[in-house]
Image (tube, rainbow, N blue to C red; front, side):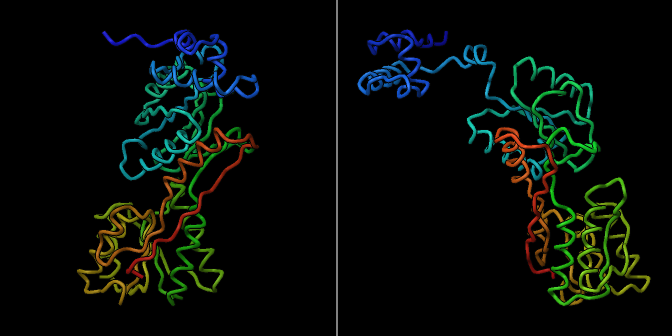
Length: 334
């Protein structure tokens, strides 16, 4: 049997004060209630001696506030890299005196509906609706009218009903262009990957890259299309090199694509960066492990999570899309 939890009445009796006085002291309201310093010290000492902890469930029933936030994602929580967004959300929640509950759906709408219902049954105050990959979503009907911030996702509404926090992929593409230009690249710059229209990150990275090159009077020489994985990238770059392509710089749509490009260049006898500069996006652990270490533009997962909670629990403001900057991590591949 667990030990009996000390009650507020027991604290008050030990301190020799009324129950309401003990309550005001422990709620930090001793000054506005004009409670003497001696009484305040007696209450605090009694609470410590009795190991008193307030009954948060009872308090939430009175105030209708539980100081809890639920983060619901598809697969964000189980990814060790993108999971940094969870760490950022957790740190911000703690800074606001809140607990963070985490639920993962793996994209199953039935599981999602059940999770949301369970969180609502527990009177969660607010929600973060998150996605592993930046994409457009429909906010579940169960969350209508409740405080919600979208993390790494957007809605197509002309007037957004919720804040959305996403990476600044267009700015990242621009930064990629400016990094190459600063290194002296003006031509023979090729993109590696498939910037398909349905992949928001690829589409925006390409748009930003083109804008950044155009601002300097340059342009992209071409696109080596492939899926965003090492083996397809290796095969696509190998074919391009075999057909006579002589790129001076490759911009890879993520670090896995860059790994495949590295392998193809090495087999073709092309040195990185002496013969070909390689730049990428995401800044996963892979970027630092490659040899030479890969210059990559970082996905700011921690900052995304932190800002989502700040918008949820901070001062009220009109819903908007918030783009978080993606910093360039300069290494030895450019």
